[in-house]
Length: 344
Image (cartoon, rainbow, N blue to C red):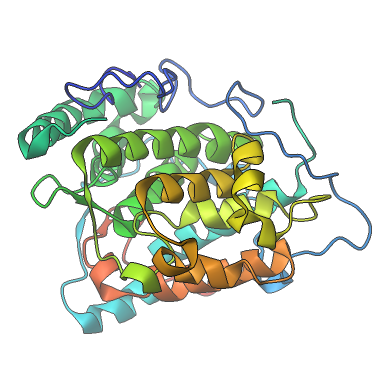
């Protein structure tokens, strides 16, 4: 995707990455790529603390990733209109596929061995930027989708457009983040992203998405969508805390208590997604950390990263995936249908 398209209108912030969100002209993203974050843990070892097996999911069967070229793709639409509709969501194939992606990427991050390593322009400017993305989204997605699956492009592009915030309210939150997870899930379903892309999905593609959204938040002072204030984990994101904590499991010296240590964060944030999230929070908020981010402050007392990881997955399901204000805007298509999961 063009990085120029994703550059906030009127802003030329030198600190932002010039790398595209998804590389144009490629059917997949390489697993060892520039921009991956180094995994400094010593790798898998006997007796290593793991997530509960019930939380883990095996890698998707590559034979089931790409749908047939004859599949009838459809433009995703809303299906959750009232609180009772949440029952359909909780039984749907869509939530099953999203949770499977979350757990699969989480497991791959944990088990993969080490690899090498503003100003405000107002609502009108953001809406101009959003309109440009809305206009070009299908063309951007088409650059990474095989020609024989071109019919999938309009469906997949909806999730990309939904992932960057609301152009009316100028806000952004975990529902928009979930839309980007859905975008990644769709790319996996049609075979653009594959099993051996797992690490790159998080540390290349998703991390680039985080960089873009942080730039938008800073440039346009976007409001948190559905924020719980000090009682929430973070005003904007949740998934990087899950995958970031998995990255730190069995780290030789960084423990959960260290992420509230300014020195430890400043020295290590470039290598660890979780610490990068903490740094961004401290840049955006003022006052004692324990006051503006009380939930994270409490999490810093958890004894191990594996327990942090397990707890965050449970929290994400309860506070994001099962909350009507978050899921009411989710859209369903042929790749992420509202239809219930079938047994067997």
